[in-house]
Length: 567
Ligand code: ARG
Image 1 (tube, protein in one colour):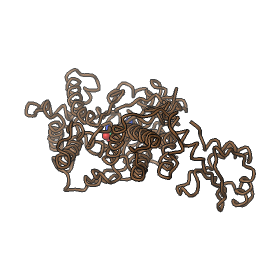
Image 2: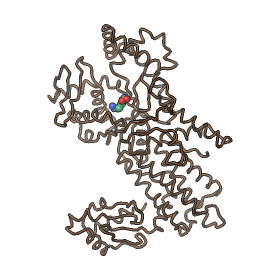
Image 3: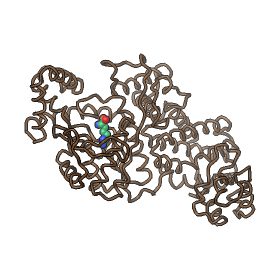
Image 4: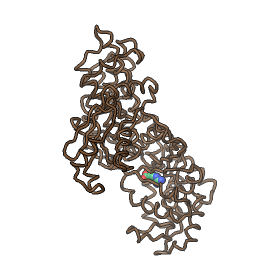
């Protein structure tokens, strides 16, 4: 596809001899200011002239074909470029004809490996709304990188190890037959955990037994391992119901326990550096130089930590996947943890290629509008309940508005889940997410259901049209009204948007873009009759509708949202 920014940059580089000049070209938010703009004030220092003069001088020397650049304009310190709408239209439609569902995809990632560590709930503990964000953001990043040609490895780094398992084993040993953990694993295991914890507080010897169980588990004792396995499997089965609802998959379920026999190496490597020191009985790596607290490698009682397991995981992932980037998606509460392990990992003797490419992708908290959601015990809202509530709310809307709709169940599922996912991905991830049913289910808002509704509208246009012409039969001149051109220009940006969203690990860039496309299509739809007498006009507008249809579907799929075909 023609890269207009690059064409402009090349010409500018010729004139100014500034090689990285592309970095000074921006896409103005105000469309009156052209399609691309050179920010001459950024060149003022280097060129020792005023931005205004730079803009005019470069403008004089420009030699770009009118077929590509319709005109240029100097406004204050900006040199603005206006792309010929005919060439954009042609470029976009031709690209669609060849790429169809892969429009916007790329090969930039070919030959590169990306590890994404996401979701990662803890065994025998509730999978709550906090984990929703990690799962949804991680899954979107997974899809986005794949679309860019990367080889992506999705890892669910399960919290399936640690001293709490010694406690659970003890509780189960004592009262296992009182609880139906097969039926309701997480709830029942949580109850056992609370009960044994209380007992430990009263009776020091019970705590001792728990520690002993964990030690046995580490030593691969048969009984303890079997129980641990049972807890893990039952919990996973319960988590799987959520993953099925969200349609999320992983390539590996290697959780913390997987590294139980891989930590010795970490400890001995760190020991060799001489940097592993005793502090209050624990073994730590001092990180004063980075102004952060030490990374604890071994606790006072000799047991390893969450951090040690993460260090072992870095080594394993480097060796196994030879990653170009390893991304961790968790809430911002773990920012410090990741700083600590990323700095400490530099002492493990790994190639810098690995340790310089560990990336923490933090996100904000979920804020609930209390009283509006059915909760189970206390304030912990289980993800599964929440997703089911989304579905049943949409069910009610369908019953009210369109009770004869075919395939209601599946549609309610797609719309309900889509609404939750979109709400999660609509803002920069570090912002706290506000969870409000009315907002996220508003069919006229900037929401998942709105996108789906617009997609369904394109479907019905295509259905009425019956056929989509070949682009050789389309008269591009017919698509030069403002509404069409604005839409086409936005469509042109898709591949760039996908790349930006990967660069920043920010799915919201795609979410916002899709809303723009939907809104521009809505304007186009309201201003232009699509199905009409004039065959030439109809064919062109139907083709445009077809492109929008594909972009909306592809974009939503990148976010992890499935489109209903009707609603
Ligand atoms: N299990 C952890 C939690 O629920 C998240 C794990 C994130 N991944 C990692 N490699 N530390 O908070």
